[in-house]
Amino acid sequence: MRRVPEVKWAQRQDKVFITVQLPDAKNAKVNLEPEGVFSFSASAGAENHLYELKLELFDKVNVEESKINVGVRSIFCIVEKAEKGWWKKLLRGDGKTPHYVKVDWDKWVDEDEDNGAGDLDLGGMDFSNFGGMGGDDGMGGFEDSDDEEVSKPQQEVRKAGDTNQEEEGEDKSDAGITEGKTEAAQST
Image 1 (cartoon, rainbow, N blue to C red):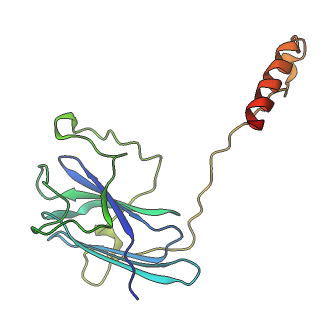
Image 2 (cartoon, helix red, strand yellow):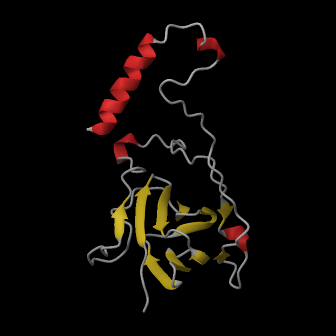
């Protein structure tokens, strides 16, 4: 049985952000055609279910300038529009938007607030160009490799009552009050 992953989207005047929500995707293949056809397939889950998706985007796109990042939880694409301008919706046609396509409110900017700059924080994601990915038709078929590693930034976590050398000489009476509040908050 074919399954369809959840898709989130947002746009700017010159690009569309498409995020395919599929944790632990294996053998991800993404294809983008200049006519605006976006297709995706991958397997995921304990039973390696096949997920497939084909979207006919509202207008034509620039495959050569579009980029993709395959992450652990999602596949994130920056699709460059062939012509600048705001799309009325993500998909062409008059039908209702499928239930698995949703607006990505974290990336959404209203038309009158779009300053044209790269104002989206991409968190240092490594992007590959669709156009430079090869493929039989030169349109950028993409295969995920298993050699990617994602590391979490290390953070120093301090608990109430922990001390370092700078605090050695400080009065500890406030630390006891803080610990008592923390314990009381945890017990409620």
